[in-house]
Image: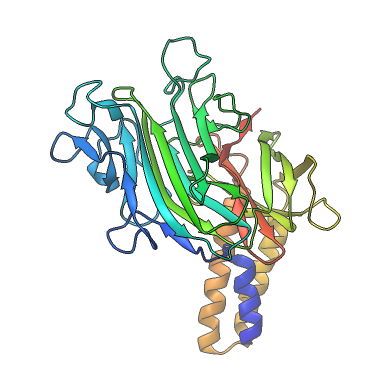
Length: 378
């Protein structure tokens, strides 16, 4: 019986995977960073007491005056946040440089190989909020960049975030300082990852951020981590979810795959809480490829019948279980009922957008996630 219940709850619960970093900075009051020290170029805010309106500092999210929303999906109680950096010193524009940095030095990497970086990034991301070099407005590009160096060598970018031509922040991969992905969901923290090739004795990490737009440009970072021995399995390209005729179609592209097993497609109506709506196996022969691969997942509103049958079966099974086990089976039935309700309305909700993200599961069970993308309704 215990084995059956374990299988049941595995089927209806969220998919979660864990992997232990060898270094992290969660920006909390204690134990952050886990090794070494954090050195910001400046740390200040204006006015002197919360809520702060101009800042480059480690803060609690409720102590900053955000323009049009609240941050979500962050870890713990503190984040590093910024707004109108050049005015954070004394409230006046150009009181300091609009680009500032945070450096983590002398991280021991002796004997470590296959290092990868992961971190959470968020920003206010309405149209025309941010500048890039192509906008022609005479302002420098706004950005969030994470770089590394080994043994004191040259700095190399591992994650680059710039504005699109439409003025919204997203990942930039071509080096032209113009975002080339789907814009981040405003104020929702999104995980970005990158390889750190090479070996050595010490590793330094540097975050660089630029923002000088008064009252509009807000960004934040959180939960920076370093991992060893599990190179990032998938580099995602474009992700394009579309809803048409009550059918959700998600097309996505992988640029590279290493030791990849399968994908998990997840959906959310608020961009915060996600539920699995399907899985798809890797199209590579052995889980690895250095070429672009296209994937398509389709969900129609015809799959609730089997789930309904599952609930009926669970309720009928209550007759044959002990009183203690009936309680757990009833909980399982209620959970499935909630899942059916969400599934039934996942493509026909006209009042709220639908957000999609792709989870990638490695052959060893670890996972990474793509950026969050809003589905287009046709």
